Length: 312
Image (cartoon, rainbow, N blue to C red; front, side, top):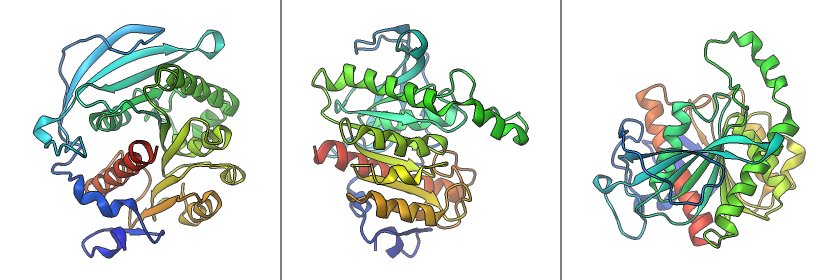
């Protein structure tokens, strides 16, 4: 059933049903990883971006159908405004980047939590632009206060670097980001509920955020191969979560995700892609991974649509 019922698919589904079965209404005609075209045009962000650095960029993104109702093809893709922000005050001040769909903005905001390479990483911003291209406002905060993990660092230093990222400080920075979104979108009546997406390190933090939120602001979530997830937090999550991972990912075991799905409930789903390792959905390293990344993006897109635009 779902992806598992398609012989040509390289993915399997732990859950017995998925909203992905409706993906035919949202066709992806081209690989989303090869069609970004960045322009040097600069425009002002139309939102009231308090504390903004004042710099913004408008970027043309070539992508697939961006509106469920209007059947817009990929040639009519969105213009996306990007603006750098400085949010919070004092010790709580952090940097962030807001991606805002211009032409078919649906008024809904999504918080995107990055992997260890941080909010300025090209793969993370690529993905955020693609989400915004489908009508969303996407906020990507700097979870590491200007000190993300770098490719050139020895792997032996990873645990030391992770230990330097105080969990309480990270949680406060995510709370600051959430408050900014609430002030800008929810309080203004633009968006009733918020969505949250996370990759790797950020995917693990999605569970922490939802457990603390208790359904107050976030109404749906997508966790891509989350790491260091707290099992005790799962029972406190009040909203459905879509978990996406590969069966060849030692950092996010399938058995752990299956237990999270049972603990959280509320319509949560786990989708496992056969043969895929860590980070395949936003950092595909081969044509095969790129195809699975397309499917993962479609799953996420349908999940957000149902959770933020249909069921609210």
